[in-house]
Length: 120
Image (cartoon, rainbow, N blue to C red):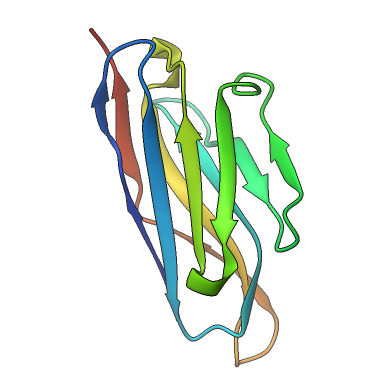
């Protein structure tokens, strides 16, 4: 089993910044793509940003130029630096990882989610 533990959410004013972290642990051989998704009540979970093991990134159009995803492969950790936050960024943010396990195959794992609230 693989566990993803997120941290760094909270309340921030519009225009402010937050940095989310997500550390993976457990029975894994390596992690391929890691990423961040977000969800608001009544809406489907949507992609925010992903990053491959070699550092290739992909962003939702709504966060391009404001958010930066990065990772530390040695620590199995992915980060999301969020700048110029807007009220529309308010959501529960979920970490996601595609991990190769000792039991064979690649599986997708999710964190428990961390709340980000942008409000004055």
